Length: 356
Image (cartoon, rainbow, N blue to C red; front, side, top):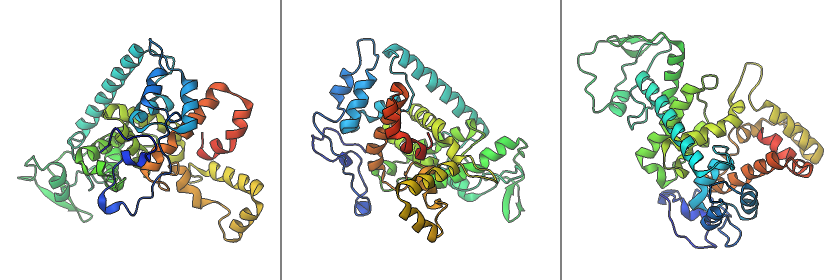
């Protein structure tokens, strides 16, 4: 639940309500709305010309000075993440938005044909299929995901490695479908653990949106699929954008930058290069700290693995992240557009650590 109409000087935390039983466990953000500095609704609207082209330079400057007002964060993030070109017009963006919504609807329908739980408003937390493609007859799944369907009557079952298998259901042979369906319950388990301190996720509809988006993404990006941590990266999009398709495309744009973090092989992990860069930087900037970590056996810097994997998402609360991300993405926009040497020098280490 998001609160509106909060005055200048108020901590932006006030816009993202925390459950009463969790207030002591969630640290408060130091970011405050600053009149004249924060990118307000009025300043945001004034940054567009009559056709709808955005003065991205003034917007980025304002973000660096005082962040983004919570009421326009969703719209601003769409530009910062690259969903829209600042030079596009209102009509062009609306056309692109509608095309993307239709594409997401097609992908979601494709997933729903493979598994009816997609789009059902439920979150699956138990396996649906065995590794050899045999559907699992699991009462927990039936109760949780298809409680409105009387699917358990008259079905023959057998035990397969201790798991009750539905013999009446057709065995799946497509390896890609099997692999995708094997991830669905893991997505559900992670969704239920994501930002559980927020009142926003007490609404089951918001939980199901998060599950559906991650399920669809796991299908369309078959090289990466779903990995733990993606739910943390997708959650802010659900909070900021009301439309599920719009939230999906914001997440998809973010994953274009970060998907390498989730690609692991037998020889290396996705963030290995970033860990090596971190070790090199610390060795130069703080040799004593580097030597101390070497002494403790932490010279490989694996303690920073999770930090880089999901952009410090687990190290800070969602409320802090809402204020922090626009600063990161706005700096990246500045560098990509201006290509100035002094800008690159200032951000070189930061961008290397984040893997951009």
